[in-house]
Amino acid sequence: MQKRKDKINRKKYHSILVIAAIAIVVLLDAGMILMPDHTSSDMENRTLQTFPKLTFSTLVSGKFESEFETYIADQFPFRNKWITLESTVSRMMGKTESNDIFLAKGGYLIQNFHTPSDEQYASLLEGYKGIAKLTEGTDITLNAMIVPTAVNIYSKKLPFGAVKGDQKAFLTQLQSDLAASGINWIDLSEPFAACDKATQLYYRTDHHWTSDAALLAYQTYNKTLGLNDSTTYSKNILSDSFKGTLSASSGLRTSETDEIYAYLPDQATDYTVSLTAENTKSASVFDVQSLSTKSQYNVFFGGNHPEVVIDSASESKKVLMVFKDSYANCFVPFLIPDYARIIMIDPRYYTEDISETIQSNGVTDILFLYNANTAAEDHSLYQLTAE
Image 1 (spheres, rainbow, N blue to C red):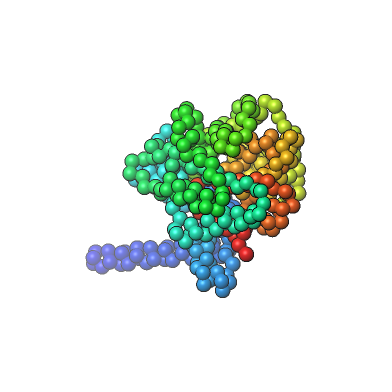
Image 2: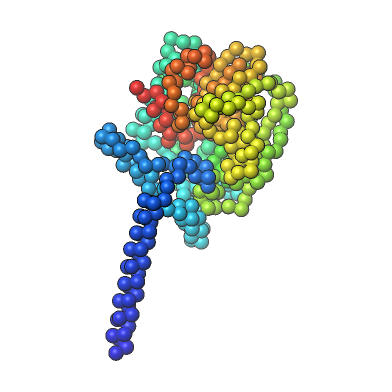
């Protein structure tokens, strides 16, 4: 009699598990259908994949399938809660990596690097070649400054056994291939590796470089191009409560904070900042309102925009166009005294005719400024120049 009772109880238990599993699947599916798509993540400070466009071309090329997989991952119901839960379980199991982010020494969270496939690399390279082709027959100078990330420069801080992509090999190959297209390389790997250990080049909880690193990059930029480097600065703290995207997206070290600094020139140059798409103007590169949000790094220019135009009272007649990601936001302010106009283009959001923009602004110099991860993963520069 007892055995029969136990058998019935087991069947009930199994039935409950099956019903619960089905209910969870139904709820998640319903959530995917009913919940509106999010275009960005405040927690991770990045753009999220929305439902991809289905065409014959995207279907045949495999682009739709790839973007749809990203869409499912980005729009998964209660995604942030799952990330936090996953990181908590991982730490309990002694893991030192979560969501492609290493729990490193010295309080650092370090994002991994992934080497692009041959096909992906070829597409990335075509973007640079496309811009170079637009400048043929002109005197426009092209320079590239691809910033090595913490996984490269701070590799000794990585946990034992960490498996990372070969960023050094990627940068070496890219340097060689860009040279073949007439694009000069401004190397940061050597000065970053050789700088004083007391200099913090990267935030501990975020993937961005610090203003200290941006200043070192500016000094290297000037030295490489033979420009004046006599400006002196005062270092000012903007925030001591910055919690970066690596902490948010990994769920690790969520209670730790970083400091954000800005270097202000002792002799300032007057300038105006125009956000073209937003049709707004400002007399400052700083958006102090961002300091009261989760995305405090957006204090520089208010974040990323399709096009930012900076007109200065500089005695220079040169016009610089910068193809950039968010690393440029704390670097470009150093350049203001050196150019009459600086045009920042973020290819991820820019949809205008780039050839016309180059010509109409009388561009004399072009700078490609990306962190190595963006340079290896983002195809928007190619899409900007593809016919």
